[in-house]
Image: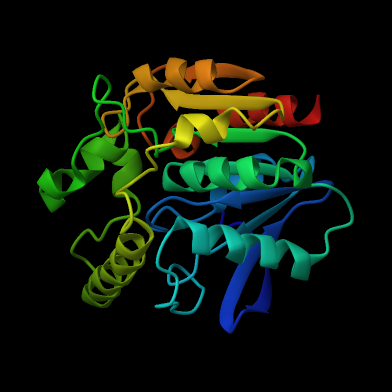
Length: 262
């Protein structure tokens, strides 16, 4: 069943920013990864205890194009401005997935007092040569679902299957648009920051690192590096799950919710 989201819109520095919201309770701000193909339906797994806010990054998903956003620092300012505009009734938790995990890390480092607890799901950004990420550019399009999920059938739900040419055309256009936005975010240093470990030392918020043990895009061996760099971190490794761990193992959201509610 499709999750029934409320749609909120804000003008943030001239960028129409769309936020999908669901649930009741303490707010959780969720930052998505380098594409929005899997959507936000995972949030239903937290909606019984939390009000989950899922904005689309500038130039991605439901939000308007933002050619002036030319690096992660611009995105951080955008989200601080968005939080000002949202004027939430209490301090939110912060949750980020993949590229959104990198984004959440920089955001928490800059504004740790703005957030309560932090959850990083298979976060990008820590480019350690001993634990290399897979080069997305080297993956043939037909092979991508197998890199996104340990059970490729889970990822295939979000891809065109050849039965709907209009959907396939829109899917391609959306990925191209989002790819341009990601390219601008990554222009300064690539998918990460050379000083990210130094930034992490500032994040005194209780932090949960979640990773699928079978992640072939960002190896779960990185989890120990994140845990070592964060002052107050614990790790949750999910068996038989790949990069899209929240979609592949939705039961993991119970444990994530327990951490946020602690």
